[in-house]
Length: 139
Image 1 (cartoon, helix red, strand yellow):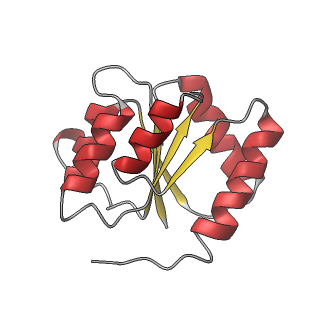
Image 2: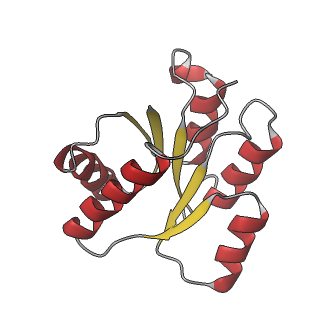
């Protein structure tokens, strides 16, 4: 499975990579630093012409250039991408952000863990549910 992580915070990117390794979740993890790169990755433009279509997207909300809600809106409006599950991954606990994410088609809204063990636990949850139990549309 190809997982696209859209996260502007480099330390959190590293933590996600390490958590996937520690959890022994065997998947291809692809990292982009903002919403512009996320759209380019999914549309295979620029530096991402050989990028695989992700099977799952983990999307931060608060990013420069293009925020997560804008990216989510574009994904769910694109008939080639809208079938891809999107897990919004954010520190925001504002009801407006949560409701807006679900309104735009997010498949889940997940609070970012506060420590490394929390990230490992989260990766185990993602792996066991989203990557092993859920079945996907593959076209």
